[in-house]
Structure formats: C-alpha cells, structure tokens
Image: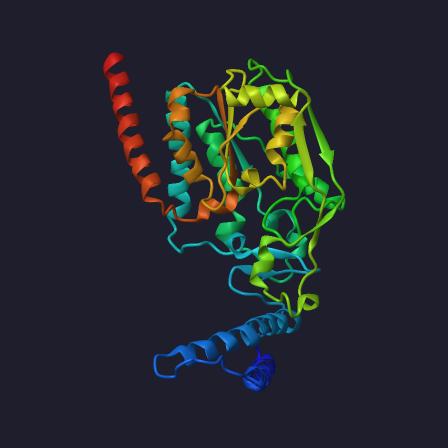
Length: 383
C-alpha cells in the first residue's frame, strides 16, 4: 500500500469511527424500559442491551461500509479472494500455496498414485479428471496479480505425473481454453466453480476419453435429457469475501447470471428405481469435490448424458478431493458393491494443500502396508 493510499485509508477509518459513534447514540433516544424490571438483578441492563442490539445496525453497517471502501478504492477484499479485472474474483488458493512446505505437492501426488494402485489391486480402474484452475483458464482477468511459480506449474506437473504412472487422465484444459478464447465464461465470475457451460464442455471431453479408453463397458445404453431454465442471479461464494450487503450492495461486484440446468434420464422412474435397489447396471462411481457435488453446475448430469450411462455420485463439498475418496474406499458401498470404474474429479489447486484429515492419513498408512505386503507376496511367488 502506498503512502497516499495509506493516508486515504486512515482518513476513511477516522470518518467511519465518527459516523458510527454518532449512530451508536441513536438507539438510546426515546428508550423506555419495560415496567417492573429490576436494576438490581440485571433485568434492566439485559432489556437495554436487547433493545440496543435490535435497533443499532452499526456492526453490519461498519462491515458493509469498510468492504465497499476496500473494494471500490483499492480493489481488495478480505483474505481469501483476489480481485481481478471487470469484477472477476478468484480464490487465493489458486494464487498462493497453502503451505510453504515444498514437499506438499509431492506427498499429494504420491497419495493419488497410491489410491490408483489400491484400486487396481482391487480390480477397479481409475480415471483422474484434473480440473484446471479458474485463474489459469481466465488468466486474462487476473490483472497484475499472478500465481506463484509453484501454482503456475501445478497442472502440467499433475498431468505428467499421472502419465508417468500410467493413470488414465484426459487432457481437457485446451477445451476450456478454446471456449474462453471464443468469449464463453467457462467459470463463474464471482464463484470458485465452473459455469454449467464449462461443466458440460468438460464432461463431454471426459466422456469421450472414458468411452474410448474403456470401450468394453456398456456406454451409450441410456438416454438423458437436459433442461435449461431461465437465467437467475447467482451470488458466488467469493462474494462472501466482499461483504457489502445489505447496506452497500451497489458498491460490490454484480452477481453472476446463471442458467440452471437439470439432466435426467428419459426413463427417470426406472432409473431412480435402479439406483434405489442397487442395480448392477450402475457400475461407475464419481468421486470429487463441490465441482461435482453441487447440483447448480450439473456436472454429474452432463457426464451421465455424454457417457450414456448412469453413475453413482459420492462427491462431497468442503473437504477437497482426497477425503471424499478415502470416505468412499472406507465405505460398505465400496466393499459390498465394487464398481467397474471410478472417476475422480480433482481440482489442481488441492495438490498444494496439506492433507489435514487424520482418518485419511491413517488410511494411507494402512494402504502402504497392504500394498507392500502384496508386492512382497508377488516377489516370493515369482522370484
């Protein structure tokens, strides 16, 4: 921050304090205590406090005003968001690594490999869908802020690691880049996630890869229909870091226009009955993050449509891609009804985030022992 901007900030802060100080006295004007309240046991004080809290909007007003000042004058939000050009917002998880530990990325790549090895030992192939960062696809909207080198290298590093290990992983970034160059917003402007258009485009490319790579499975046997509703306003998750509502809504970024999509099987009733009773025809499992779990993007629906087959979606919101995978591998669903194929949706930025789940870490320790024992057994059998 320059000296000039620092002076402006100080002036605005003083003005804000003065305004809020005046406003803080207004709720006391005309206050009348309820009859019968005793000042001795605190009843009168609690009544005054309740009246003050109900009448004084300074807390929200101050938050909204300061957010409006930061965004309007300095193009800044709270920690967690990076403000780009033309009201585009980006999560700072795509710009800065969550940890300065240089081994985090290597450890997470190793975990992906061990999951693939574990599934393969169980006779289940894995496809990893690496989701490019919004900051990578819409880099033209970042402005002067650029991702740190470790974040810049994540996507290619991930894809190369998967290719070296022989783990199927389609290269779908060019599809999104091409659409972006043609003026399509494949990610939402105020949200971390892709738009329904971007999700559908990505699903189509993923389905073409999967159908070609695993052509022995029963693809194309079901028809799915997508309905597109009228556009609605969508306040993306990144607007939480610019809290100008409700007092100064006009001073923050405008909401996105989202076209809700819903994809259903043509024989919807039969499809629901099959899923309910565990029909063996549903033998593909989708694991992932909010990119798959949140119905607003319709990614699982688009994937079903382009695959021509139903799938079981066990994606979870808020835990990254590794924890939902471990939850699934630990589940009775996996043990009792092993799938023929697992699809793992994995946003690239999570490679740079430490795995904090003790349960997931414990699973990897157990998996390491199991895989080592299996390798030793094979060596003894085939000296």
